[in-house]
Length: 204
Length: 204
DNA sequence: TCCAAGGTGGACGTATAGTCCAGAGTATGG
DNA sequence: CCATACTCTGGACTATACGTCCACCTTGGA
Image (cartoon, rainbow over all chains, first blue to last red):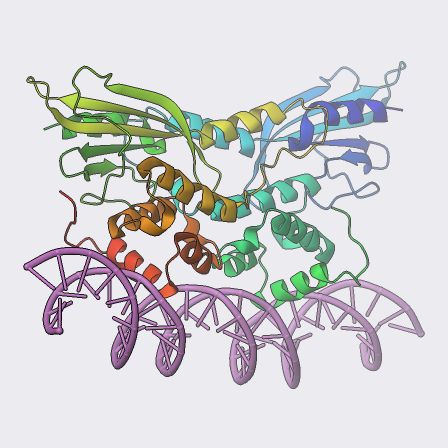
């Protein structure tokens, strides 16, 4: 019933927000959009701190900050959605990834910064940074932190990297391998699988 | 004498602007702040298109756009700094990297974007064509056909190619060699001469 | 003609790009 | 709980590209 609300919020906030719809009765996830972890529908909700039984209590919580295992910082809000009779029917949680915003803000504020504190990490090797960017974009899209990527995920990332002609650059292979947290051998294995047309297709 | 100007501009524009002070007499770099390439003081300036001899000509050029091989877009301005008697004492060039701003803008505009279309700017892989373009541009500038280029000419072209990060691409060396109509050996010889600051200068 | 400077091809050593394999986790099914 | 299948991994190994060096040749000037 409340699913269109979650989907609408997820669409509005783009790829940087995770929207979760919880069932307060079973304490499980009803639906999830743009998942950042590996949670899915049916998994435990784990939001015991919300009191959904008292209709007189406030129904909107946050924004408060959460920190994911990979260091991403989230701004989160939660809302209790009630039936006309006051019974809690669902709990809507929106988790916004602040990392892109903080990054953008840091770039913008770097202009005019009078201090020389920055040893310019942005200018080392540009294609190097592009690799990180492509990988990071994928991680953000599918919501899994780099270490939890499946084999198919890595193949998809490699397809993008290859499309970006990253491997036409000298010394790119070890950089990509470490960016994907994979050994050099595995990297070549994945690349071979990706480049052989006999393998079954993989959609990006 | 003009060094404080360059340093001040470099400090003001933060880490994203390269400031170069050229000596128009020796056609070499006097000082450089936040270098984006591997250029350093004493290296050839290679700004032959600026006319520094005519005091009646305009002394401010740009802003115009340059595109590096890695895709970074630069906004550049140049200024001829003159003595009280009108003699050109130095040339100041400021190259501002627009990439961080564009990146930040892309991140911010991603919010509310209704489509899931990929805004990934793909890696430019027409470096082969780019080599021909750089060489052709130089040939057009000095009016000599490719076979009649002097050693200094080839050094200048190589400096541009190196600044464009062409040699960071795999298998670029033979392509450049044939584009310059020199042997692979000569190419490496010229490159070694270009990259060692201890070389004696040729034209003065 | 001779000499000097620079270009040329090729030999050579090194670094990087890829391949291959046996062993060590890790999930899946019984 | 064990067995099987699968994948990742580090290392050894080959191939290829990178870069250096040198003897020889061409060119241009005294």
